Amino acid sequence: KLIESKKNAATICKAIYGSDPDCTRLLGTDLKQVGANRTEIAVGLLQGKYKHNPDVDKSVHRRLEDLPASEPHHICMTGGYAAHVARHWILPADRSLQSLKMPSRLAPEKEC
Image (cartoon, rainbow, N blue to C red):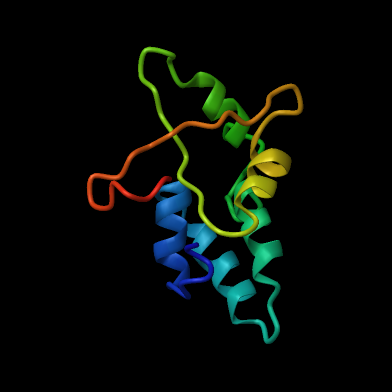
């Protein structure tokens, strides 16, 4: 969603990685390319392509595994490809998606 919103590279990098000076430069270059494939860029962000040294940092899978069970977290994803992205790019191969009803206080007649 950040990629689609056309926010600048610094804003996107800060939201995904926190402080990483190389991300702004690398991502900015890719976003400015004519006909840039934003899906590929989003995948690259999830895979750590825009980090200074992705081998040193934990993968998304590892970060999710490290979350304590006593502190439930969720990842909010919307759009036509949300389930596909979660299944194929975020979840480890030995895991599956679980449906969870999340009632909205603003629009209780709708389901999330």
